[in-house]
Length: 308
Image (cartoon, rainbow, N blue to C red; front, side, top):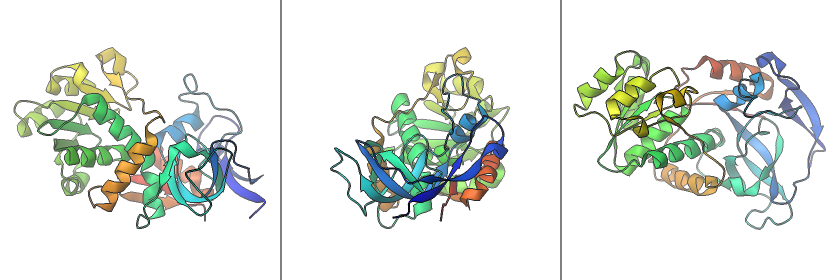
């Protein structure tokens, strides 16, 4: 095995330009960890929020810090107490940070087996989106026969939430720019444009309003989502940090149920009931460009860094 590996890191808060590719010694997996040779790493908004210091008050990082919470790769070593994986296993998971590298030591409990027919890039884009979507739908109690509004439905989390809600038997109305409306229809959602007048457009499709709403965009839609669902208790967000002002809950998807959710998602992917659009892939040296595109918003699906 290689003695050193390349990783993306930052040593101070700032713009994408603070990201640098450096070499480190390949780590040994600690107790409860596995060493993963990373084949692909998903890019999530939290990555650039941590890098920029935007969430430093709640989630400070220890420098040098390596971005990348979603990974897919091959197990190359196991730490003490790990019995569910062996070297050579193909895995994917949500590990918090550290995935934007050629190797990473990751908590085994936050990984699941990757189905053989799922591309690395797709597997790397799923974990945070899957964990967050399941958490939001669980918090809202979405079930068959209900109508759910997903604001920002063409993004990574939004598109996964649409498909899981459809699998549960719910009707889904998804917001996106018009260029993404055909894409939303392909996922089983009824598309509407986002922005002012959203409640009226939703009621044109659902005259009695919606049963629940999930805001993944954070573009100021909470008042209209509360209006169209009948109360703040029927709305959750992962993107609007003014949620409390509107009485809306902020979704926090922890690691406790991640493996079970990943296994459920893998089964849906294999069954053809869940797909993920990979908008673009980047090399490690292009990680700053990936962060810039993620910060700009309006990404259909996921951005992925491929170390090789």
